[in-house]
Length: 305
Image 1 (cartoon, rainbow, N blue to C red):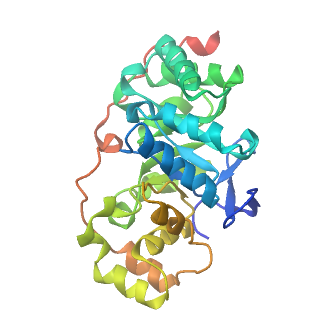
Image 2: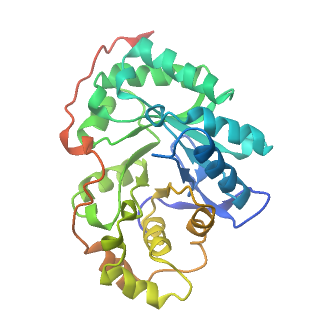
């Protein structure tokens, strides 16, 4: 497979389809597919989507301080009865919480609100909040203290990641970015950099934000017709998986949560991959800090503490 190499073993689950794991920097592993809860309403909507996902066999959930549904994710995780060590739960730092002390306190608050003892990963949601090195040092401190198993970033371009590396900081284990065929060419240089440095690309927007016009593009529907019983969503997720991306499709519907996981029993041909690679367009649904955010280091002395 292209991109980050997938570990050829399967994430331990008690029921449902098996999800292959992928290796991260630091020799940890995580499921290659999980549930995203962006725009899932706090309360029953988020709780039920996480509950259904875990029942279906998902073992990874991605939330964020910005989503305001961390507590609902945590409750569903605790109520599931699944051993904590079998799960990968991650959240992301709100741009208002950048800075050393604010990061320390807000991450601890997130963990407390979720009712968990630690998180498997915490990402800087975007470089828009600035103080990139200062904020990163706070996450590294939380990792050292055992509250976070890994740390990563989201919506970072090469220049933002290099700001960390150039100041002698460890690289993030992952970079969560908008990634689907429409933006592949635009972000190829970033993808290449992440591959070269061992940073996993975690893709959001895999399903074209549910936009019917894009999902019904002839290049998509032709491939769907080649794979009996598969949907446009499954084809796009399979494209991302074969590229080596970690996937976090979002849904609040039980049947779609289950079907989004059913992508490991078929394979796209090289010609089908190339056809999807050639798609172009804009969803107009997401922000673009990768392109627009400046590099603001903040204080750089905290790493010496």
